[in-house]
Image 1 (cartoon, rainbow over the protein chains, first blue to last red):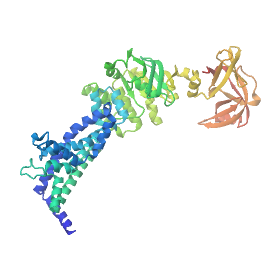
Image 2 (image 1 turned 90 degrees about the horizontal axis):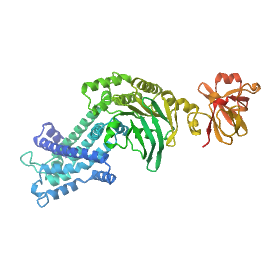
Image 3 (image 1 turned 45 degrees about the horizontal axis):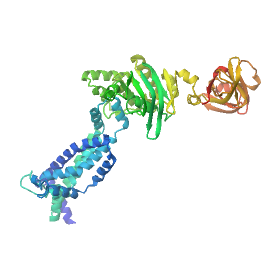
Image 4 (image 1 turned 30 degrees about the horizontal axis):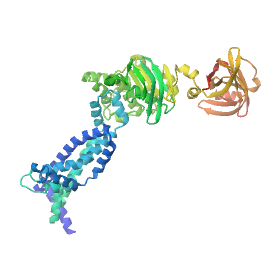
Amino acid sequence: MYEIIEGFLEAFRLIITFDSDVMAIAARSIVISLTATIIASLLAVPLGAAINFGTFPGRKSLINLIQTLYSLPTVVVGLLIFLLISRVGPFGFLRLLFTPTAMVIAQTILILPIMTGLTISALSGVDPVIRDTLRSLGATRLQFLVNILKEARFAILAAVAVGFGRAISEVGAAILVGGNIAASSFASSTRVLTTAISLETSMGNISQSIALGIVLLIIALGVNLVITTVQHR
Amino acid sequence: MIELDNVSKNFGDTTVLAGVTGEVNRGEIFAVIGPSGAGKSTLLRLIDLLDTPTGGSIHVNGLDIHAEREKSLTIRRMMGMVFQKPAVFNTTVTENVAVGLRFRGAGRSETRKMVEDALGMVGLAGYGDRKARTLSGGEMQRVALARAMVIEPEVLLMDEPTANLDPVSVEMIEDLVIRINRDLGTTIVFSTHDMYQGQRLAHRIGVLMDGAFAQVGTPREVFTHPASRKVARFVGIENIVEGIVVGGENGSTVVDAGGVRVRAAALNGPGERVALCIRSEDIRIAPAIRGRRVFDGNILPGTVTSIVPRGPFSRVTVDCGFALSSILSWKVVDDLGIQEGSPVVVSFTAESVHTVRQG
């Protein structure tokens, strides 16, 4: 019990003093997950729009599959990417294993289904009368799409936030393809908040783990605040 | 201007429209009235190219609108539509009204001017910077009307535009419909289940029943000379009595209605089965003792079966072999001193009896 209280006190000290190790890990987490979220958004929004407004055989099954992949286990994604980019894998020549790039790829794939699925929900949630109104006002296909996206902007923003939350909080893929490496340079290190917590806890550095955990929660809270502020404006 | 030729529409196994034929003239207000589920919305959506007909054709300005795929955007841009449910985009009032102009690539200053004019027309000048979602239903519907009108459409389609609104907003929208038609010459097609709204606004009415026009005509024609028993019922004729034509007398037809003889204006051949439509307003009720033959019409003795209040009037139903209802003011009911069971005499002219053939 005493150990835990001490851990918290030490954690606060690390945060308040902007401990360089903790801050570097936090910054790396944000950079990697944000990159993955941006790439996933660029893919998920057009993909979601295409699936929502498209008419093709197997559309319903595809949506079901996407929804099933919401709960895609992170280690499975990690394993898949690991197999693809390991030295003996088909993309081994790219030498991506244990790099931040590999982590970005893994997180992008991990959050793509949930962001696509939530984009589909966001678009299909737009009032049918709004869709009819746009068409009756003489919108071209592109004008129609742009305006539907505008109407659904807050719901799509929520989808982006959910994606970022899943990316920054996952540990399985990050550790498998990243390797939790603390290299000398910021860019070649792959130690992020979740993998660091995992390592520090196993090594008994409770205070370090608690500090990193609190930072992770603060980031989540920050994202949430940004979203709610935008939605209420 | 708009020609409907045998237009039909099925949704799966459900037939919504089964051969609608009719014409809307340029510059007129045309009301599509009919009970809920008659296919009014579907018909307007087909005209606005929001749905595709299963059969038949719709011509606008001589153009078969569903056949010319590559011209569909041009055709749609000739028309504006207001929907039953007031719906606005999640942005300012100004941006809402400007959408159609933006689609057409209008310039910035032109757009601002036109949006201001449109908002002024619907009585929402100064509302431009408000968030459209914060407006009341009636105000939203006026934004929708401004949004449809700012593009200066040749045809304005309105699908039950006042169905969800309070009475004051209904009146505003109705005034706007009349003003738009009168001042801008816009052809307006609107649907309503409120026959009185049809009567108030329309130059002509199409009564849509069972997927087709049961009757097309001026409000007066539809309300006084319904084409069928169903139309008569829908336009609020309370007294519909079945009978068989037994002969003619002095230029009028005599109909036997369950043993009671009724004189009607129309000339039908003997033996024909008809339904007699008599408006409650045309039926007079007098105490039995004064039942002398004073005019060359119908005078039927009977007994009062019910007196039901309806607004400032009472609906008095008399059994004279068949039930007939009349609308009397409370004062008249008091003066007559009638109550349930009172013997009375019901009278109405032969001209007020409209006969329709039983189909």
